[in-house]
Structures are given as C-alpha cells and as structure tokens.
Length: 360
Ligand code: PMP
Image (cartoon, rainbow, N blue to C red; front, side, top):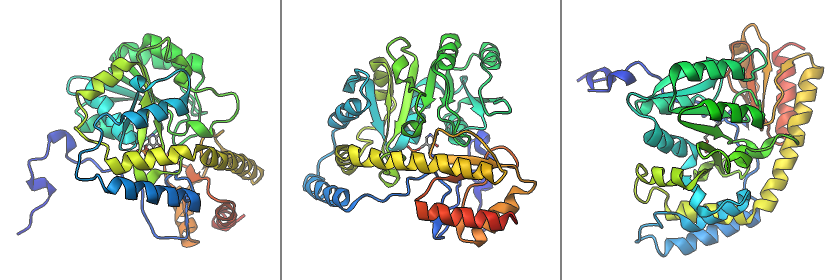
C-alpha cells in the first residue's frame, strides 16, 4: 500500500515545508554545525559519569519540575544580579525558543527576524502557528535599525528575534540598537545569544539591559561555549514574569534528572571550559586574517564560526571540500559558505582543503 505524507491530515500550513537538516556525515573533519570541537576533558567526563551514576539511583522519581538548583547555578554563572526567578532552562535553546513562541506567539500573531539569520526562528514560529516576517539585513549583514522600526510599526510583531552574535554571519549587535528595537516593539524581544561567550572584547551582552527592559529576553545555550551540544541544555534570562509565562506552556518534567545533573556538573567546570573558548576565539581571529590574506571576503565574526566567500558556485566548493573530507556548511547568502572553528589540526586540514578546492 503506498501511503505518503500527502495522505495524512497534516496541517495545511506545514504542507510542502522542509525540516531542519544540517547534514550529519561521517567524515574526519566536521565543521558544519558550530559545535565546540573539544570533547569533555577526562576529569569532566569522569565527574559526569559519577554524577549520572548517582542520579541513576533516583530515576524512579520524576525530576525537579522547576530545575531550581540548575537555574540558581545558571543565574550565578550569568551574574548581573540575576537569580533563579529570572532564569529558565530547557532541552537546548531551541526548546526555550519554542516555549517562548508557545507563550507569546501563536495563531493570529506575528514573529519577526532579520535575515540571513538562524533558520530555526522561522521554523519554530511556523510550527507554533505564528506568522513569520523576514526583514533583510544590509550588505554588511547589519540590521538597519530605521528599517527595523518601520517594519515593526507596519507588522506589530508579538515576538522580535535579534540574534547576537548572528548565525550564520557572526555579526554582533550594539546595545543601543537593541534598546531602540525594544522601545518600538509592542511585544517581547528575544535576543538569541547562543554564541555570547565567543564575542570579541567590547561587545557587551544584552543581559545588561534586562533591568530596564522587562520585555527583553536573553536566550543562551550550553551547546557551544560549554561544549555540551549532546546533552541539550538551553536557558534564558528575563524578568521573572516571563518565567511565570513559560510555566503555562512547558511540559511537566520537561528537563530530565540526567540532563539537570549533567548541566550542573559542567557548570562546575566552567573555568576549564571557558579557557578553551578563549583558545577558540584566538583561532577564529587568525582564521579571519588568513582568509582575508588569501583574498576571500570575510564577515567580521563574534562567534565560533566564520562566513566567507564569495563564490560563483558555492555548492561546487562545498562538494570539493567534502571530497577532501572536510564538511562545512552551505548556508547564508548566495555565494557564501560558513565554517565552524575547530581544533588547530582541523583548521590546518580546512586551510589545505580550501586552497585546493578553490585552485589557489
Ligand atoms: N540559536 C542559535 C543562533 C543557534 O545557532 C543555535 C544552534 N545552532 C541555537 C539557537 C540552538 O542551539 P541549542 O538548541 O543546541 O541550544
């Protein structure tokens, strides 16, 4: 019997849509999903195993539904006078974003983003029945704030996404620009700071704005700086009223006891982990310099990845890189490619493959 997706009573607004799909290919040099290339150190891996073993003895019970200890420790990590009441955690920042859209978006409402940006913002918006309005960035991948304010006045979005540093361009936002958007926006402004720890000196976090702007929400993740993508831990900082709103949509016991334990243990190793972030930032800066010295166009990056180009046929370059066992990402504006910063050895392989793939 032939039976396909088309035969199911799928929602009309999901018909013809594509799922999120960064390729997961088994090659030696994987630089396509902005992961942290450093596996947990032996000491951290041992601490994680011990903490999970301890938690295992209580797995007949549901976890702490409010993840209170984890939220306290995340608040302490963030500083800025935050407490657990203004911090919320979930399975990756993707789930944080989904809960935000469940609470503040939905049918009859609109979310707005400035593209190119993180592809899950429109996907999660549509998945929650929220209309999506895309406003283009300028030629330098910056947000034209005047154009943003006009679009906000026209569409009155319930949710505005500002990604800083932005994926896939690496562009960070000025605090003054975030404030202008927040003053004009009628709903909540979600500053997606998944890559916050990778910013260069002098680009402060939107966390500093929370006291004065109760409709700004800062979304963070342990997937990148904490090298914990496999554990699925994201979180947000906001006014405690935002956390109250999310309690209305979150599933009970959404964050497993194992996840909470793993996140708490990783936070104890934040010194070690943030030291590795400093190395990655240096590696990122030298990658940008090298790409420019080879004549490529490169977007300034405050993240753990770099957008570079411009190629007449970027798919050809991407495929030639893959032929050389280096997986990067075909994403962003036409003609550009994105590479995640890996270990020094991986970057040697990347440079070598790119020179050959582009015939330099
Ligand atoms: N926001 C941005 C801008 C991202 O690039 C990503 C992951 N690539 C996420 C959120 C989601 O990350 P996670 O769910 O692993 O926290």
